[in-house]
Length: 94
Image (tube, rainbow, N blue to C red; front, side, top):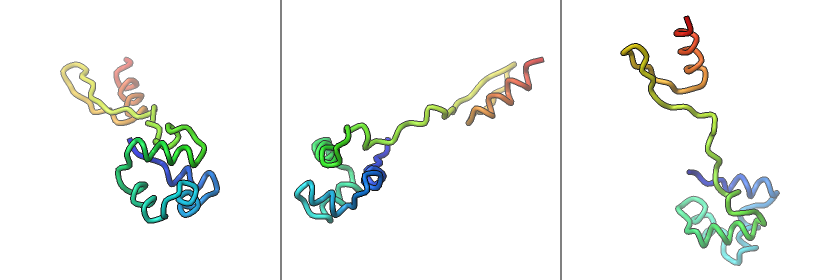
């Protein structure tokens, strides 16, 4: 699961410098957190400074993603998208 802190900063019309000032830390320190692996405590501080719920800092998983295999009549098919699935269904509808 990725972070979208930079996106939220832009959405709020802020800069990393402004957010760092709100948090009482320097820009380099905040950049290190954003580009690294921030702790939950740091994420909570960032969310509070941005005035968003902490969940807003995380990328949403694409609920439309499909990845798997289907076996039909002893033949295995790889499915990577809904269109793959639809094509497979159409092929075997008869």
